[in-house]
Length: 291
Ligand SMILES: [Zn+2]
Image (cartoon, rainbow, N blue to C red):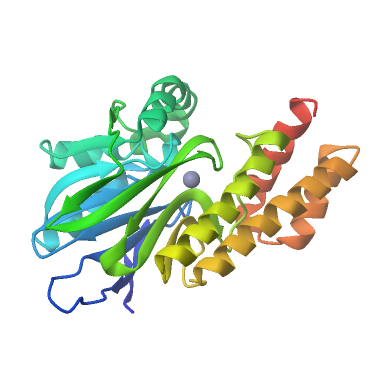
């Protein structure tokens, strides 16, 4: 396990490979944006790479580019797990460095991207200043269930609901690794400002589907959508963490008369000042939607 800080905005954790007997296994490297803790994954063989999720800030997306260049990797494609800015704004930086890389997403995710992302950019571009993308890069719909990198299979699977409608996850069999997008959070509160109670119930069901899939596929390592660095849990521990957070959140909002009361209850369980904003945004969304 490699733990290495790079610059001020990102860190790269963990390069793990499971060598197969006759073929070169793929490696999966996790890049974490320090400010929002959103992850990107660099899946690579000896010379080619695929990136899953593109970060939010220009500086953090640049860390992915720098890492690819330092390893002399040829970027074939970037896949986006779901249509949220913290996983996709960085496409602008990445495509400028690798104009030939394909930008892809599951068809339903690509559709959500077209409807949601312009709104996000309108809302966030001023806030992010010189860290905002100069333009949105829209993924092309990829309807296949798998693709190959250096002769090794990578699977893409769709689920209806994670922290937003339409999401996808990836499985790299030769690395016994899955990449969950924002279906799964590790040691950091889940984003609940883009789902309603019915959708969160569906999200919980999908977490069971994920866990069953991981067991069936022999997944040993999971890269969640967000992670607090240095706290890599097992796949089932991350899933349990996410499910517990969603249940605590539901209990807090449904039993509180005011947003302040609900925030206080959730914060008592997850007392990290750095992530209080995530709790507040979720609670605010619940009360403003009048559930
Ligand atoms: Zn996210």
